[in-house]
Length: 363
Image (cartoon, rainbow, N blue to C red; front, side, top):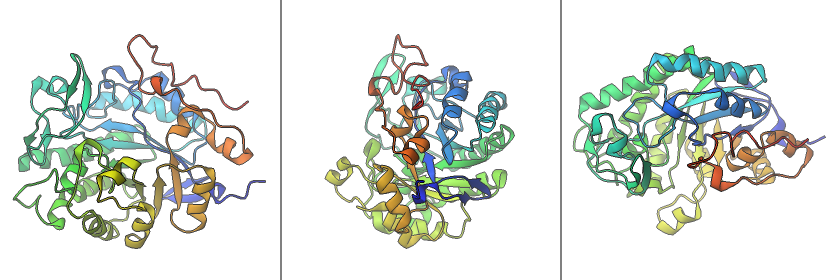
């Protein structure tokens, strides 16, 4: 019998989990027209043995237009298709949270309604390229959000959470990581506002705390938050990441979150400097609640992090792509399959099912 702490039950918010192996949110781009579909129901239900599934990032507004074929939940039309996904996962014995997301400046005008400029805390262009109807393009220069824009998007997160509740999700994860809108408000490389949403730590976390409040009003305490204090995705930077995120984590202790989902730095992040080397340990020093660690773990290192009290759960991304029955493979020490990275996001001429629902279980 495998006595790894990965297989001890726990709770996040009011949701009981049979193990501490979390399926991390992963963009997979299998939702034409932004609508969830039967393929997605199959994909998530295949992985229902995870202690918790967190979905791919899901748009709270049609202005969150970073990726073609990313799903949305910005109108009531999305409720029934998502309900088909959650019902299938629950029938397979799983638990599933929806990750709510807005891309902010990580967008291109060709993907925005009416070709308008993307929204961002400040009119500072990010880094990176996106797939657009005209091919790969560099992200567009954004426009600085007005206070009414900020208020409207805060409400959009709350409305999306209410739709998620109606669609049968067990909880919500707010995407506050990877250089998207919430992260853009936090870090001073992207937020150079002079009003009460910019400048001091207290001002820069104001948008995030407003989003947390709006989502919790719709979903209670079954609300988690993902952060990546050391990651430099899309040109992110901050002059004092330890100070900023230490302050934020201390403030979040008063907000009764289900968990914090913390991403470890990648080698690139260390090369860029200002990386918090051990994010899970940093989080444990500043936050007393439940922590999900993410980034580069295997079964042994994940079990050690839990046993040492540095994390309560551990999430896995790439391993869940090719191993739908990952908890069983960990428990029985079975061989792990490797994903085909050419098919992770789909490609022209590929069937949407390829590299998605065609990875078999171990038996």
